[in-house]
Amino acid sequence: MISAMAILIISTALLLFYLQATCQRILRRRAHEQFYHAIVNANRLEFPYVRAAIQEYDAPLDYGRFRMQLRCDFLALTYLLKNAMNSGKGFSREEGLLVMNFKVLSALLSVVHLFGVGEKALMLKLASILQFFSNVLGERVSKIQLGDMTATEYLMSL
Image (cartoon, rainbow, N blue to C red; front, side, top):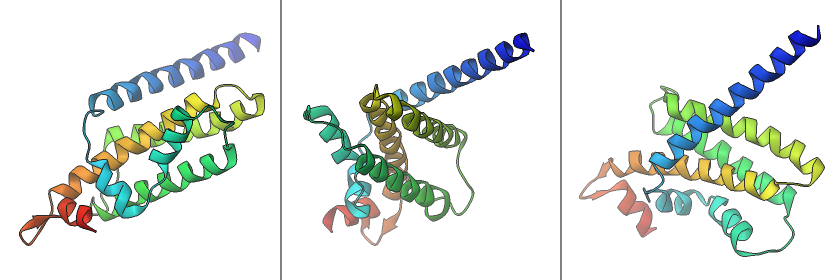
């Protein structure tokens, strides 16, 4: 019984490690793109402000508010990626892995909050996943033509 539990724990830990490593590789590959500004402004997303508050200020973390802002941004971006800009096809493999990673890190954030260690690092990881989603969405929107301007140019003019 003990060996079965050890195998289960080690297997789960390895699965989470490989998920995290794969997601970090995906995020690094698309980190240089800056399509997300138009999406952030058009949808009034909060993750850039959460990231700035965590990185720039050494104040105590407003866990409840920041977690809710990140969760709301996640729901909005995943809805837009899945339905509005993808004709209802669902997520790509990369997006699906990042959705799963966001949910795992979100659950881990709750556990880490109980111990009071490492909340800022996890919130920054969640914000980077949201930036990836808004970059992908911004890239798709930038390809849509509205008359003589692209949809991104239109969103920036609002």
